[in-house]
Image 1 (cartoon, rainbow, N blue to C red):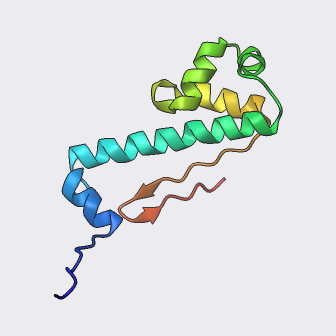
Image 2 (image 1 turned 180 degrees about the vertical axis):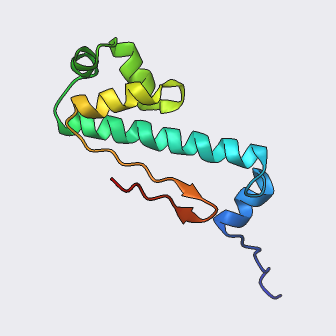
Amino acid sequence: MAPKKMNTSTLAEMKDEFIGKVGTPDRDEYEYELRMEVLGRMIKAARKERNLTQEELGKLVGVKKAQISKLESSANSATIDTILKVFKALNAEISFNVKLEGEYVRLVG
């Protein structure tokens, strides 16, 4: 008896099938949520690197500990202003890339 052949799929194929193709509303929402979760994890890692508690970081930023906790679990509900204040309080650099039609926008100062 010949061994059964296993079907395999790439992660991209699985996302396309179960979440939706790139550019569809469901896929866009998934990608956004994923980026916000990663941003929250980056904030948590930077806070721990600075040996700060959530409460201490909250005091530096001017928000309550609960808001820092929520931000670290997902930056989804935070404003850009709050996120920038958090990174400033952590003495951490943050950079943004803007891509239009496949090309990164460059700021010339």
